Image (cartoon, rainbow, N blue to C red; front, side):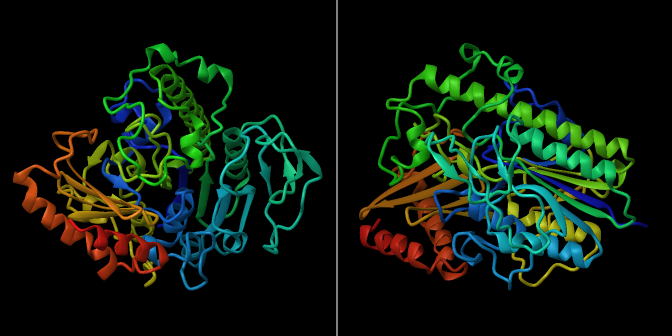
Length: 466
């Protein structure tokens, strides 16, 4: 029997809880809903955190290598030749590999993963209507530059350094999905394919075709219970770029507007994703294609008084993850703790290829069985030199160290899913605090949190005391 095709949709800044079929009745996501009905949704999927304020950069490096946060190269700016990438494994297994969209991990690594592609964007963010993109360069050099044009963020004339063309007036989600549909319509090879579509949405600047924005009236948007005018303490990142996208105090009116734009961006991406899935169906590939849909990190947008993803609250580290296709139960939900790094070994198992020894993620195949076996009993989380966290069962510990001052938070997510009631000083949780702190130590004893950022955190953590 022919190996199944693999399609991965990866969105940018889409947090968990933004899919209608999985509980958000304020948003319209018919195509993501369809994927949820065709496959299995992992409702406790997380990123491990980030070693950069651009959290998506290490997140994407972890997705493509299956390696843990402190075992990738640097902060994800590049991928070590020693770390076998998902695309490399699939190419060696006879797959045609085709990549589209955002690639935040260096030019050299793209052609290791993909034998072809188009509309490749090397960077973190840009104007969605004027994406500076590359056509596939077989040499891997990607050296062409555009003539002078207007930088959408400074209104200055600059030379794009990461592009050989701009298709002005076409939104990034449409640009990438046009490329994916074109690939599927023209594909005639007998070999299975790996199609990777890395959206730039719903990352800001949040712009989209007007009909999608018109679907959301800001005045009808419900604010989450943990909306705040500002964060209750200094977490060390209150002045980072993402936090400057809205003034202080955050107002209900402003956050409703941000949420309306965010939902509209997701609905637009959903519609474009639907075109690709329809093309899979029209071309006869759908039944023998594994589809993975996930987000690279979350986003606060007013929760805890924050706007960005530079924290360890659920809104920033918990992400959507749906898998559908051969060997995957339809209409299923799994609550096992998992990371995005687990996608890589799971795909290897599903298509029957050996998992490289460099991969540290765990296959989700046991969780896909009828018993829904647990994959992990805890999660470790980290953000730069400022925060470390651990989730065990319903309890979550976050330790924040800023300029020698430690702030400890414990939340019971079963009773307090919005992380509002800090239990760190509640006497009955003293034993929980001690146990979770022991768990936290495994970052530095087992998982390599020994570089400069880790040394900065742990030295401040130890000096600050309990």
